[in-house]
Image: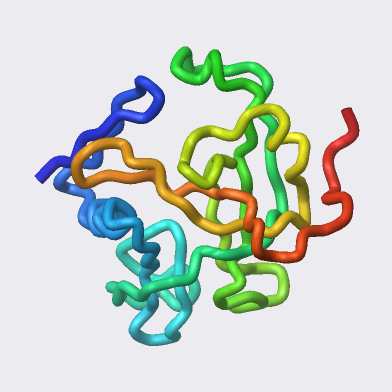
Length: 172
């Protein structure tokens, strides 16, 4: 069954032909973070796919994953291309390497999840919070509900974790 939602005025649709993403977002809708694990090599993967990107084994088993990690890269959006985001700039899109499976399959490849920086209640972060986050910041996953059966995984600053004194940020 096709799942539909809305995020900041933009329609979201996950086709019933997209089984992997439907299952992923089903877990997200329950505010529970799951990723696929390869039945052969046991490595977790993101985004959901029909086969393991590391060993090529088809299929996968869903496994609960703790959504905590460290920002390894980011982009600060200052000009919204989508009209729905016009009143939201500046905002951050974060690439966070999860603590789970760190350093695997290699030192340079890890389990990384891309999402927006939000407040703990799942709202897009404002300029003051945007300025506090950079490479090295510790994050935790939260979910932004977008409709029945769909929620978006997002990143909030992990206030319980030790944060770097001054996370690295691109010079302004």
